[in-house]
Image (cartoon, rainbow, N blue to C red; front, side):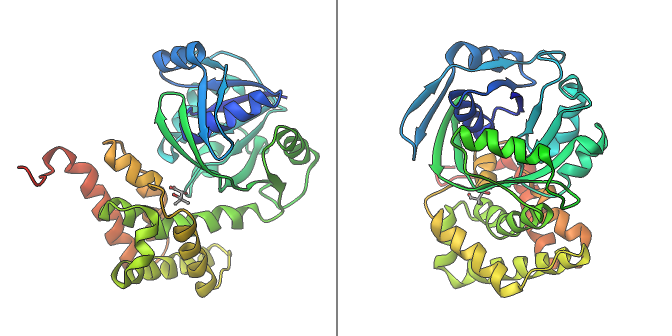
Length: 307
Ligand code: PAF
C-alpha cells in the first residue's frame, strides 16, 4: 500500500518506522526541506516499549512528490491541517484514502475545505509517543488505533487499511462510531493537556491533588455537555473516570501540550479546550484556553528562580 504520512512528529515518525518495517511503501512528507533531508539520510530511531528500532525511511518536502498515493495519514498539529493539505494536495487522487489520527476537534472539517470529503476517513489513536529530536521517538505506550467512515458504514477501504496496518504490527480496529472515538480522546485531552501545560507537571500529578482534580472534573463535564450539542452522548462520570485512568496510566508522560510549551511551540489549545468554549457555555474551558494562550504569548518574559 503506497502511503504518505504528513507530519514527521512523534506519531508520524512512529507510524512511519513501524509501517516501513512492516513492508508498506511509506514516504514521510514534511514542509521543511532540511528536516526531510535529515530524515532520509539518518532514518528514524524508535526506542521504548517495542525495544530499539532504526529504520531507513523515504522523506520529502517536495510538494509534487511522491504523487497520488493509496493512503495519506495526517499527523500534523491541528492548526497545520488545512495548510499541509493545500501544500501536499498532489498526494490525493480520486481513490486516495485520507485518514486523520490527530488530536483535537475540527481536523476533518479543515481537510474537507481542501480535498473532496469522499476521500476522508476518521481516526484516533492511543499510542503514546514523544519526539526526542528530528526522527528520534520514544514509544512510551502501546495503544489502540481506530479507523472509520464518517457516516458509520464499514467500507472495503477502511477494512483494507486496517488489514495492511495490522499486518505491519499496528493494533487497529475499524469502527462505526469513529466520531465518538475522536470525541472520547478529546475529552481526555480536555482534562489533561491544558492543566499539565499550565502547572508544568507530568500527567499523573493531576490526579494526586484535589485542587487539580476539581478543575479537571469541571472541564470534562463542560466538554461532555458540548459533545451532547453535537449529538454525541457520554456519561459525565464515565468520561471523568476515563480521564483519570489515562492520567494514571500515562503518569510519567509529558502531555503533548506541555511538550509544546516547554519547546516554545504553538499549542493545540484552540482545537481542544478552545473548541469546547466556542461550542457551548464552558467557563472553565475558556479560562484554561486563555491561560494557555497567555503562556504562549508571554514565553519570552518568563521569570525563573534565578532572575
Ligand atoms: O496529547 C497527549 O499528550 C496525549 O493525547 C495524552 C493522552 C494526554 C497523554 O499524554
